[in-house]
Image (cartoon, rainbow, N blue to C red; front, side):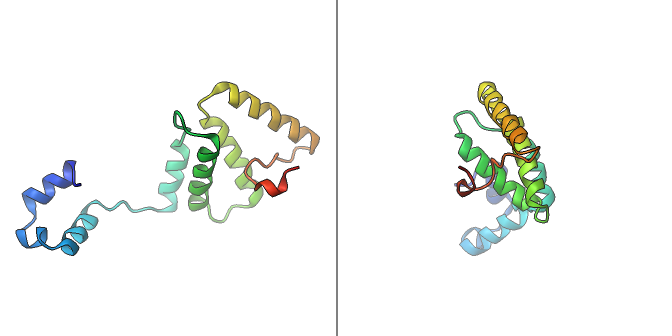
Length: 127
């Protein structure tokens, strides 16, 4: 369904021949309203992304990983993990969970000599 600005544009400005041809209509709408996604736009979205109310932590983490990988394709694994852990913690809704994760992260780093605990590695690396 077409709503808002797009519907006003479609019904007020497009000729009838475009309205009656699905491919022409979708091409015209795409040309006018397409969002261009670049590494910069993904980085901006990543920096604003916080956990949504009711969103599982796993889903939130997966979305952060997706955005990060599109925004920062050439960063090292270590930098990626550190950045993701920080962004994950900064965006958590539940402050108690945030504290628990921070506490376990610090304990893990102390045991491993300052190496990040790897919250964003696959489960196969955990014991």
